[in-house]
Amino acid sequence: MGHHCCSKQKVKRGLWSPEEDEKLVKYITAHGHSCWSAVPKHAGLQRCGKSCRLRWINYLRPDLKRGTFSEQEERTIIDVHRILGNRWAQIAKHLPGRTDNEVKNFWNSCIKKKLIAQGLDPKTHNLLRAASRSLLHGNGPNPSNTNPAHQFHPNGGGATTPFTISSPTKSAAYDSVMAPPPPEMAPPPMYDVVGNLMGHDQAAAAAIPRYPYADSGGGVLMSFRDQNAAGLQASVDFMNGSSSSSSMDHAAGNAFSQGMGAAAAFMDVTAGMWATAVDSGMCAGIEVAQAQQQQQQQPPPLQLQPQAGMVQGEVVGRPAVMNGGGAAADMMDVSSVYGPGGGATAFDLELMESCGLFCGGGAANAMEQLQWDC
DNA sequence: AACAGGGGCAACCGCTTGCCG
DNA sequence: TCGGCAAGCGGTTGCCCCTGT
Image (cartoon, rainbow, N blue to C red; front, top):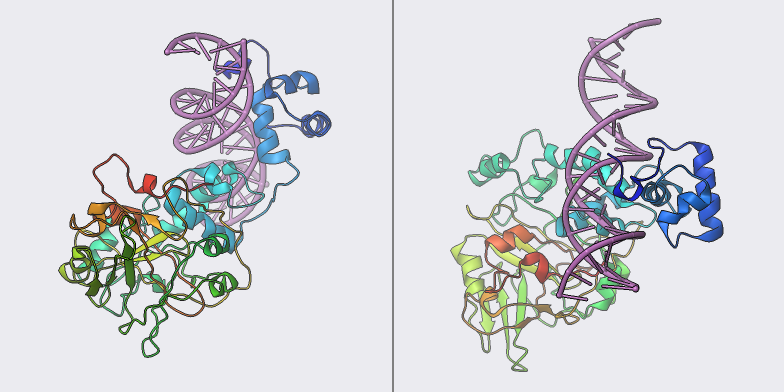
């Protein structure tokens, strides 16, 4: 069955010949492609417009970057896929010169297998059930898996579900706050799913103002601000299970840090993303976040921008989300950053959802909550 | 050398979305 | 508001090539 757009005409299908390519390139270069359905006719091709469009976009476009994906690109794909899922076109926008088709193929042929080999579910980026269970029962990671990301968190953890966004653009855009690591406690390393220590843009990180808190315990600080009541603020140290607040019920912190064992929820405002580290039977996976050394090559800026409802430096929260229904914290300033080099970003949407972090009364889900302007 | 199997990639299919009359 | 059309997009298919036997 042919395309509906070309069912009336006899069109050639299958691989494109060099002659056809040449015709298409010549035509597009000279005239552009205001209307794809008219392109084959004008270019003298026995193809449908749709086919021409695909050929141009996926193969002939002059700005395409061919060849194997770099490690950086691979990391970007994994990171963005974790947020967006199989939205290949959106993911591809973060990879200059790559097409959605290319990204999709690379994912299906390469990355997916890597993740599975590492015991991670390529759909959710969480540990696969079997791996998760063995970890939760203290059996440790798959012996065949040497990925340090799968080692236990030194603070008492579980399996890692790593995720990073290296986003200089966003880092600079967000008026984030950071908590310097206590000198006596080295921040835990963070690895991406291919076992690489994750990196951030040091320059961008340096531009980020330091978090005013002097955290004493090496934990993760979260501060909440009630947008409706200026000055009202609360902070929670999830790692240490301590908290302080001027106005709000921070049951969430207690629940996370105490009720669930070594649970923690981080947020790195430098990327506007959450990091979660929860060790519980309900939520598998622990995030270990750390700022880290500058990498030689920076990934392309992700151009992630908050959309309507989000304010720079703030992440829209729901009253019942972070505090278990206690207080109103419509806007939350949340910070969690280790290290002098910048902020690690990690989050686990599914985890957050399962833990009710984003489960407001409305229909919005976590993905909707984190609107990305791609 | 021949064959089978698997992987990678280009292209297709069909659904969704957006625009316009 | 509705219908038609074109473009966009994600899933799937099928071909080609490489590798192992």
